Image (tube, rainbow, N blue to C red; front, side, top):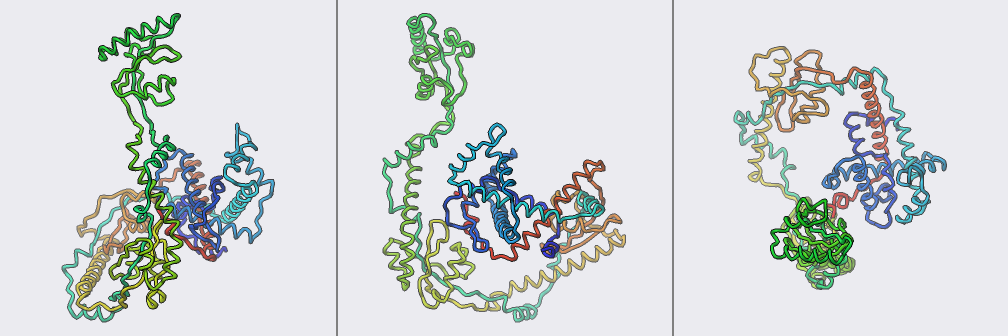
Length: 627
């Protein structure tokens, strides 16, 4: 194991950052053990053991919860990004691997250690103390037995124990640590100049003989891959939508059952005139009716009449203005009245515990969506739900039929009212992109489908889309003619020679600069100050060079050919150390370095375990878009 660790411990700073992102051994928290019932689809398998979609989704949710608990804004796009999904899955895979390893090595967590950990978990705390009732209630809500939950916690604690043990192997002598820290916190002032291959293209001449010779020597590069034209039957939920129907009654029932979903955060802006009951309720009503009559006669006087008559001291001076409010903010009779009114409407008398109200609705914001507004959307949603159910119902029979009647797709098309479709000729790679399925195209080129002319197995190429194909035309691999490729070869040869000219020129300039000859005018970019975290717009290739240059003598130079076929000369003008001289700064930096070295050891340990096990990732599930 130590050999594997030494082999993988390269680039500690980058690996440390990666370790922070993936947190391969960190406890995902209680969410890792809750809501795991059901779900047979695996996002990955580790040595035959499944990582379910449910477990993966719970872990993504744990990341969301952790970010929110740290006060960070959670970007939905980040949580659905391939990078984060891959990182979370890597963490789950590593945890599985370490679990297996610690079982082999007989790591153990005592009952006392387990009990103390659970007693301290914040999810089960009430008023700073462990609550047995909350513990049992949480497990019941998530359909977990105490034994299953505690087994999961024990497993994760053992994993953490293994991580801590590996991390303790990391050792950095003080002198090396200080040197590494100074280098890590260093800033460098940098400038660059480009010697571009494209600028030398016009100086290059390529003869027809050179082009022909290249073609003859590299014929393997100029082949058209084998191709197939496919007929296919597609059973899909979308295609079944015209075979299902939804009644208006079903739409209304859905709307009523999900009323809260369509209400939105409706706010009402209103004013009122309040006449208190006082000692004589009848007299109060008479006065209220009199004021109401004046308002009805001239609604524009509402504000004036509120100022002179309203007995709500908090709003009278403002013309009765109550501002904006939502449901639940006012007493029920008042709320019922105001939420039934139209803008600029004046109510009749509304009686509440406070007296008689005359209400004017001034405006509405965040209005609820009415049934008529939502009807088309709800109907479409219900139709698709029914189509999905029908798809699930028919999928098995569709799969069986294309297999049992493998000589043609016509029977299955007729039975399910499907339109058979035909592709153009396409390679295995093109077909995989077209159908979004490597599996289906591997079947298309299999002997069973290609040579025996049978239908392929039905493959779910994406959620709710099941496809079977058969080959109607095949073209074997063939060389491209010289005429087809000669212009491309000529361009390649010109670029190769131009790159050599640019590299030779760049190397010549670099040699002069290193010898102290700076007479040749060069188009240096304006210098920037960079550190390992802030590239200031410089490319990764340049940054890789910047901190490799020996700066004993300044200015210092280096040169390299980048991915754009440009020879880049890098000049380091100045160096400064940003590591503070005070003891606290040094201690903080030293701790960070120690943690980085430990993370590197842990990362190497995880890599050594992965190399020994069979791991399969279901990428179509992993990178599917969140619904």
